[in-house]
Amino acid sequence: MAGTDSSASSRQSSFNSLAKDLELPLEQGCLTIVVLGASGDLAKKKTFPALYHLFEQGFLQSGEVHIVGYARTNLSDDGLRGRIRAYLKGASEEHVSEFLQLIKYVSGSYDSGEGFEKLNKEISDYEMSNNSGSSRRLFYLALPPSVYPSVCKMIRTYCMSPTSRAGWTRVIVEKPFGRDLDSAEELSSQLGELFEEDQLYRIDHYLGKELVQNLLVLRFANRLFLPLWNRDNVDNIQIVFREDFGTDGRGGYFDQYGIIRDIIQNHLLQVFCLVAMEKPVSLKPEHIRDEKVKVLQSVNPIKDEEVVLGQYQGYKDDPTVPDDSNTPTFASIVLRVHNERWEGVPFILKAGKALNSRKAEIRVQFKDVPGDIFKCKKQGRNEFVIRLQPSEAMYMKLTEFVQVKKPGLEMATEQSELDLSYGMRYQDVKIPEAYERLILDTIRGDQQHFVRRDELKAAWQIFTPLLHDIDAGKLKAVSYKPGSRGPKEADELSEKVGYMQTHGYIWIPPTLA
Image 1 (cartoon, one colour):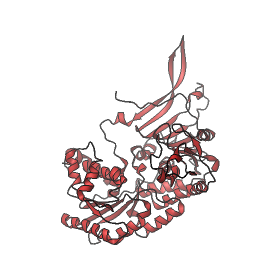
Image 2: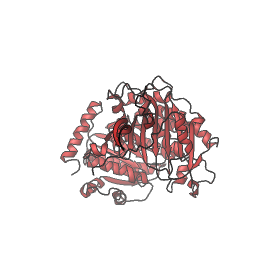
Image 3: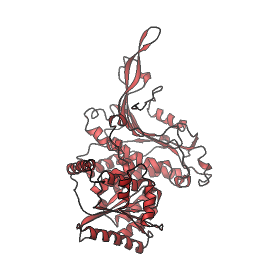
């Protein structure tokens, strides 16, 4: 049975130990998780599978958790369970069946009280039958941001955890959270009138990725990096997101946002914060988020000459995309941090669709070795690379001596690496999906990996002027071929600000074969 075997018990014990170390409350008793938008793709593909994996590993217990799906679609309990089952392929049938029995469904609209009164009755009936004296209610909004205000108002009016019982009410909201500074602030104000900041969890799934979560440990728990991570040793840092496919039928949706809003302003900027921030006072969520806000507030205004926008050829063939669309499907943007650690070091944030590869990584490129007696500059600089996806890894590109067999013997230099590949090092360890981590963090009450309101504001302050210029047509996207590296202007910009590409070197993920 899920939640009772030895591995689940061990995992729960480890979680309890970590919670204690981080001064998190160890709570028992009744927990209700409500997935609003339960019939949509996000819920079926991400939210419910994440909940299943938490259940399978023992973090959600059969006698303590109740899962309710809510949407406008007219469905039965079994109808929703059938839709979810289709996305749990390869899982244990026994565990899947037990998990699905925890799920109930309530149908209703998102802006009227009748449906939410039914939802509250479903939750309350379970809490009374559980007889635990607690009422922990987690609402996951797998919905478009346009309905957040009305849904949150309904939750506040009809579905809050009763004050007569121990517990809490928490709300997870998905991105995109606004289109610019004004719309984000308006949305924050609307939700802020209904909930306290410690009840709101603005989710960015990139913050749940294994290597992203490892950044603070890497930087602040290893003596090796402490003296190197600054402008004296680092020449430039690239944070890159590449996809080898286009909008795949989502052109109309994507065209409303573009690659900057969709990827750079949230995902890559969150990674940037963790790479550039100062050491926090402690691991308490507020101390970590304080440092993230400080580094965002230290970013200089973006210069037009340090921006390259691209749009792949064929993007406007999608009938849902306007013929005159200037929406970028590629962007390379240089951020500059005005502080003692990073003054003069360019951070190149680059993201694009329909490129020649699929990956997300951080590249920390170090300065040239002074007094290079080996004449190896042509081989390229030292780089520390953190591969976020796929094939999670960390490796350091080094220059080493090799013997090369020619008509005689010759000593030459070549690029090699020190490599920690997760697939090799942790063969028997399942790397959790980002949504699993973040939902568990919400249940624990740990907001470390969620975006605080002032952090969201600081992020939008950086990008809003640029986005308004793009929307007004002041900056144009240049065309690039699908399957290419993107616009050649992006490589020229990287070279201009100091990035030195290593030619002839390719990192090959190690395999067990």
